[in-house]
Length: 270
Length: 343
Image 1 (spheres, each protein chain N blue to C red):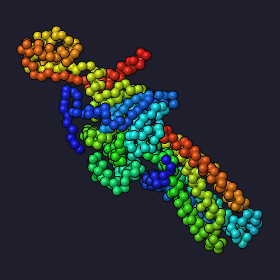
Image 2 (image 1 turned 90 degrees about the vertical axis):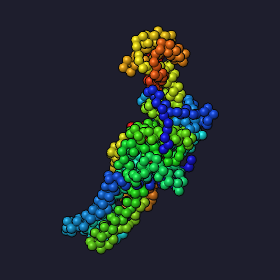
Image 3 (image 1 turned 120 degrees about the horizontal axis):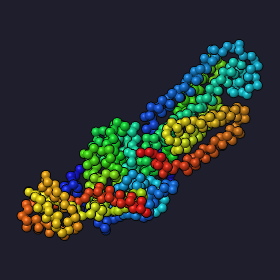
Image 4 (image 1 turned 30 degrees about the horizontal axis):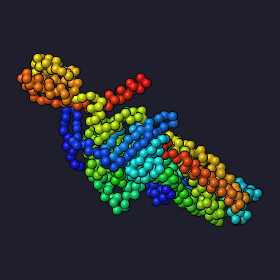
């Protein structure tokens, strides 16, 4: 039987309704974006106020690659503030990894913990439809919240910097590629890892703890990716994006292979 | 729900005309050498049976006997290690999806989404099982009515009592009007009234709507009242299959004859003891009753009664006491354990 998208969406809709009734999930998907998209860029004016201009010399950031097209027109403090904002933006990209951990943990390991998996497995849904439904449950809110939060981050960061440098930092090519091009991959990889971990973890907490291990290498990847974007531009971006795509496909195949209906039921204790 | 007619025959409740299943009726479930291994552990051992359309069939057995594994294989939740089964016209190995679409299942756990309302739970499964859109609401209302949940359909399942959750889980199993229903301990966690209403509903489903009901239970009293036939299963093997009455007779021997007198004296008891075919006589002096075990009750009961009448005994009542399914079940399991030790 082929993949019926309508069935997978039906599962996704139910899962979202259910996940959004979890206090833990609600807390994470509201507090984390608030922290990363609002509080973090609001620190930029504080940095500007607390670090005096005299600290910088003209040579600072001289050999640094241009982070914005008007880099040469900026003084050292302006360059420092842009550099600082970019570091914040990179940290912001932890968000597309934290959100799926909360949602996927609740949706998969949580389902086994709450012993609701058997009715689903007994229903006329194929394994592919269940896996796709669960993936979409995590992907849709995580990606949308990340994009929305990213736009908020950029607006607040621009508002904070405009008074100092008189120019807009965002949007720029790097932020667009990272936010709209690569962050969905980060979400997908985290989601798939959580799916793999959740099918074997004894509960939601264990799944989230194990899943968090994937965030560290992914974050290092983001740092590398940013450097590539700044230094080496399009060619290497295409190469690294392809690696991400291959990782995602590989993880999906693992998920379809290890989503064992029998194991899922046997692991639910009465 | 329609009321059922019961009559009390000694200690057993017997449902009148319950065993209505005929050999020429359509086979709804047919298992052939159905086997399941969990690693090296043999959970279900090459079992064979047939269940007819409209039949209520029970799997009885101690914990870990393989009852739940059997119905999970039949419901195509997971495949057998060996053998096959045909359920509702579909092979569980070749067409598991069609099997799943045509059966309803209540698992050991109610498996309900507690953060959602009862209505949302039922609606989700109705859509999953392709119930036509214009029928979904009517079915939910009707099931709410049957299970006495109508006024609480819009409340979160987490607020429900254990019994209400069990009823909702059965309602969910029925939402797509399946041809075959698998129920694991359907009356556990239910109050006596709720348990009775579930039993009545299952009987109606089987008899009036020709649905096949397959239950796993520890509750022998339930099995006796509900099932047309039962399979007693232990260590993955079927020890016997038959109607509760047949199994009781086969494994507990002939009935005990109870005779009540208006006045009972030692001479009468002594004469009964000396009668032909009598194995033992037990006297209940307060009630003026004797309980007689006979080699062959059909042959010797009339002779004893004739002898008592000739002695001018004032007999109030003569009745056979049949063994319950529970007695037969315990005997069978005990025998199997002893045989197991001996071999």
